[in-house]
Length: 355
Ligand code: HBI
Image (cartoon, rainbow, N blue to C red):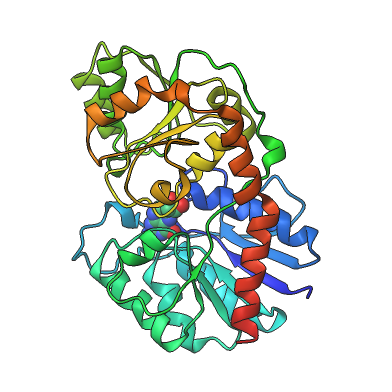
C-alpha cells in the first residue's frame, strides 16, 4: 500500500524544540514506522526544525502560532502574519497533487477550515481535548463534512468535544528499543512534561514534600513565570529540574525512578510520558483524568487516583512497591509498540482512502 504521505507538523515551534510536546515524538515515531512499511514521506515544518531521521524535510519561515492550550475558551482565532501555518498550508496546496494523503497534527483552525478546498484527502490528528469554542466548532464541522478523517488519541479526549460524531481512536506508540528496562530503581519520583500550568506540576511538588521523596523534573521549561512561581512557593521542596532532553537521555533519567507521577489539571489527550515510563518498567501514579486513565492498569502497572487529591497521590506512592515493574514493560510491549502504532495509523488511512 506504499502511500505518498505529506506530514504537516505543528506550527507552535520547530521540531526538536520541545514546544510541540508529544506531537514531536509522535511525528518522529510515525515517520520511522511508516517508512519501514514502504510509505514515502515528506515532512513540512517550521524553520530550524530537525528530525533525527533520513526523511525529506521541508522547512518554512513565518511566525509561530500562539499555543491553543493557553487560550481562553471564547478566544477568537489568532494567526500572526507572516504565519508559518499559512506558509505550510500554501506549500501543501501547491504540492498536494504529488501525494495520496495529507496528515496534519496542528491544533489550529486553518487546516480544518481548508479541508473542503483541498482535492487530496486530509487526515486530521487532534492532539488535545476541547480547549476553545472556535476549535470545537471547526473540529466538529469537519467530523460532519468529512466523517472518519479525525484521528484522536483516546475516547476520554473525544468526550470533551460537544457531539463529535465520528473519530478514529489512535492511542500511541513508541520505539521500545530506545527505552531500557530498569528492575531496581532509586528513591526518586519523576515528573515529565512541558512545564505549563495545565500540567499541574505544583501537585507533584506537594507530593514530594508530603512524602519527603526527592522529585526529578524533566521537560521543556515552557512557562518561566509559572516555574518561578513554584520555586518561590516551595523553596525547600526536595525537587530538581534536570532540563529537556531527547528521548535517549530523558529515559536514562526516568528509568531509575520509583514511579512517574502525572498530575494533569486538564484532560490530557493521551500522555506519552505514561507509556515512556511503562517502557522503562516505571509504574505510573496518575489522576483518574484523561488519557492516563485509559493507559494505566490500576493496581497492576500503576495507581489511578481521585483527580486533584494530593493525599490520594501520597497513598498511591506508599503502595508503589506492590506493583511489578516487569508488568509495566510488558504492557508497553503489548499495547504501545511501533507495530501497534503503525497498524492503527494504516487502518485509519485505509478508512479515509477507501471508506
Ligand atoms: N497550540 N495553536 C496550537 N497548535 C498546536 O499544534 C499545538 C498547540 N499547543 C500544544 C501543541 N500543539 C503540542 O504540544 C501537542 O503535542 C499537544
